[in-house]
Length: 366
Image 1 (cartoon, rainbow, N blue to C red):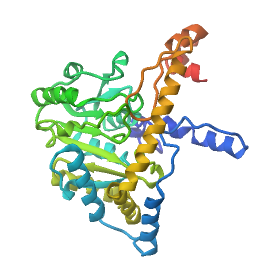
Image 2: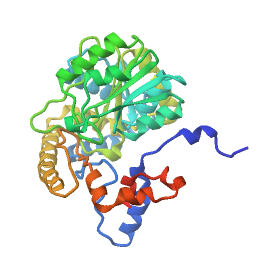
Image 3: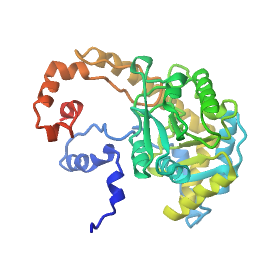
Image 4: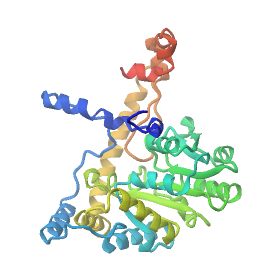
């Protein structure tokens, strides 16, 4: 008998958080650390949003609240979805979560049975695959085309779906590649889903980077495509676009109120509720025009950095890097650098047991 449950063997992690202790140890020793582990803006939450939350605390709004979210915030989210996606959305289909990560797990627990196939982008956010293996689903990675800016086409998706597909995950703008699916490609993708997938198949549209787009691009959601609102879970939040990572404000917009009730129940079974004073600040992020002023300044800074770092990376012998169109990542290909440094040969000399556990790219990082 083992102390730990066997199912934990199937649960992955996010390595970005595993480096936290090492980073803190360096900081404690007085080192100047540039953090590349977590996807977090180096901006602070806007002062006017801080003030809203502080005032709510002073007014005593610090107790339990509706596990689905306070009405003020859910109404604000519903307005935001209607305005930006052009679809009908009501507060009873909104569930507020402790960041935009819980909706991933809630989606797997709500819709996916053992053996069901889950299609997700690769490279992509590691938690998608972690949950797929944890619930004993069959992972079906959808490989992104580097030469096309880490996008994929409707034909690529058609090759991945089958009669066993239960969930399709989209992420645009993409973590970690910065790839973006435009409205035209999303329309073609939605046609594949409508014609090739059972009506009960759900689409999980991770739109946490919806605010961070470059070169004048506008965010497009698969939920806006014909017939897709009734099949799509939209997930977003405040961590990235509003630089509010520590506030842990996320939300899911569900196809039906009945499905939202399931997410609410999962909230009750995990976090009970998101603190109401934080939700008041979250509502102000959508409703106060000053919020967008900070978003625009931040995106301009990210684009300036992108325009510097990508040419600099491409100037390195053995490195090639696509120009991201959104989010705040670059995803360089270091295959040539590994060859130049003899990393592949060193990997080939490892004992077979170690070679199967370590990639050449991991050796380069070391």
